[in-house]
Image (cartoon, rainbow, N blue to C red; front, side):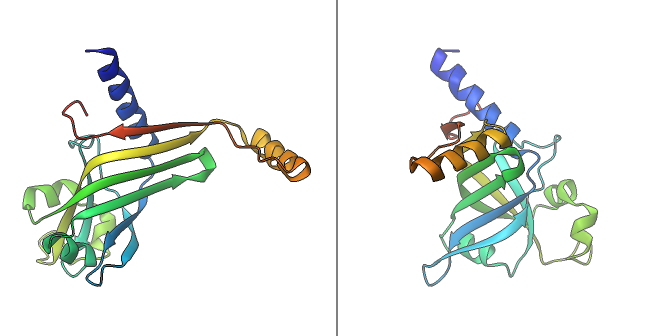
Length: 176
């Protein structure tokens, strides 16, 4: 593997490490009036799945994301944040809707029982977010340092930016 490929691979691994425990995301898409709409969703990836290529969500067939994907408005944005750990991630993806029973079985969990009448509910759909690119910020300053920089900025008038690891990652190659 070349140095560039190693760096890309490391960035992809870092991206996955940052989001794997952040289950809640805001997913944005264009609605039928071409306004940007966002909604919270729960990511259902697990270690057994091909999780480093796709992100998975269970939703109802009447969800706006289903309509958007099925009418050619499949570009979506996913935003993850875990401020307590200084983690912020933005992923650009293409939405695909699936009714694959095996995939539904793999993703099914007790949470889904609250929203559907079982795995065989005909309204169950899976949103497969096929990641295209991502950007992440991982703030590495501890909370005391962040507070000190904010206070110093308030006194001096110069912004005290927190130190953060920041990367843009192309996710379209096959090394994910």
